[in-house]
Image (cartoon, rainbow, N blue to C red; front, side, top):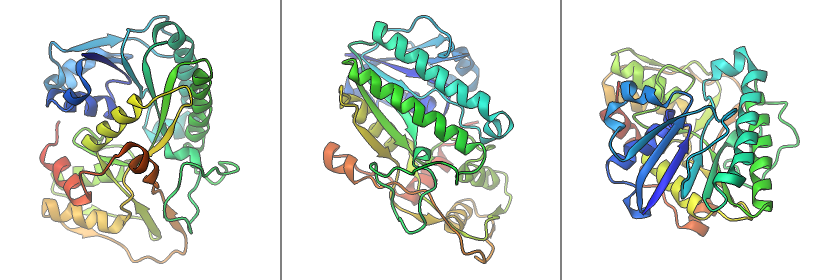
Amino acid sequence: MSTLLVIGGTGFFGKSILDCFRRGGLEKWGIERVIAMSRNAESLRKEAPQLISSKVELFSADITTTATLPAADIVIHAAASTDAARYMSCPMQEQQNIEAGTDNYCKLAKIFHAGSNILYVSSGAVYGKQPACMTHIPEEYSASDLSELPDGKRDYAIAKRDAEKAIKNLGQHGLSVSIARCFAFAGPWLPRNQHFAIGNFIEDGLQGRPITVKARKEVYRSYMYADDLVEWMMTIALHASSKCPVYNVGSDQAVLMGDVARLVANEFGVDAHVPDITEPDVDRYIPLIEKAKRELGLTLRHDLISAVRCSARNIYP
């Protein structure tokens, strides 16, 4: 039986993992104990008491400064703010936080996790702006620079690129590491008051408000449900090695944002306000996931309709 350490245990990724754990979803990997680590891990007792049990340990520490880490068989490093407003208001500080958290972890991992399987949660943002002509972005794609990304997201992408280099360097020192480049997700623990469109749509539906799309260009997104996300992260973690395999994590089922709005509106019985497309630009953020399917046998168990319904029906305060 194994222990899983989640660094960033109080965010969307951490809560989704703990939710899956409480429903027995991690049994097939032999996980009998989960350690949720964050600056204020005890906040989970108030925010999500249903996720806490005798098999869950809360470990409060700042990954940028801590000098110690709990031992664990599997480590998922998902510590980073995903609030776009923070990257807009203080981009350099957020970039430095990600880099400092990764650099400090890499120092400590050689001491505390030399025998662990380590997964670093990166982002599809590292690819830069997806070319409009590219329907799905593969792991081997590399943008020459990140200048086309909007303010805030560019700093986030730079930090994630630097963090990936640090994690790969751990592999060169003989540790078992892996990287998940994550895209967009749906789930009951997704914030409903930030920049996540589908989360905001669900909040509007919950409040009985019409769901409004502002963009007048083609915006394509895809959404992986939280339980699929957890399964993919666990599988990638268990395939960690000194070669540091990298996999895209997300859904490859692209959908126009207007259609996402209509789908959510239909689920809640509210109106959807979708403007006509009048701008020529195309905004895509869709991963190619054939590598994970081929090498790891991973699949998508939830399509978009299922993801929306599961998110809406299992919503938490």
